[in-house]
Image (cartoon, rainbow, N blue to C red; front, side, top):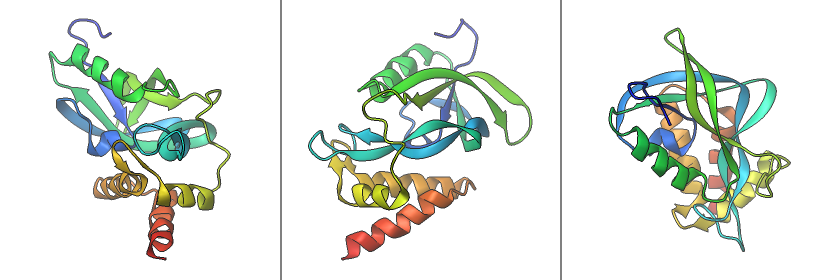
Length: 183
């Protein structure tokens, strides 16, 4: 929980960028050091099933890396409801860990204590071992409760492009998944 009067900030690096699901009072481009955006989490609920898991993005800790995304300040008075919502959405299978991180703002300055969901590398849904081709093959065929896995990939890549955050791996995956699906 946040202290009364202390703003709640949330870091978005994947679907939160295009579908935060909570009232946003302010948005800022931000960078998280020591973590990388990666399709390293098997999705058995939202973008896949237990029988045919998809993949979703997570933050995977790695030296000399960073992840660019958006910091969202939750609208005043909505902090508790937002925490409840995000915990239901992001912690559905306990593969994510709820952490607090320090972000570096693109416009200068830092934000501390930012709510950030990262992958638990000890969880059975962690798939940090997959190369890009394998990721593309999985994403091209998986569908879950929130729709096709490739829709998630394309929406995230498009919105990153719109906010000026290039991601070469996502761009490659978009092209490769389209090629796979065109066969």
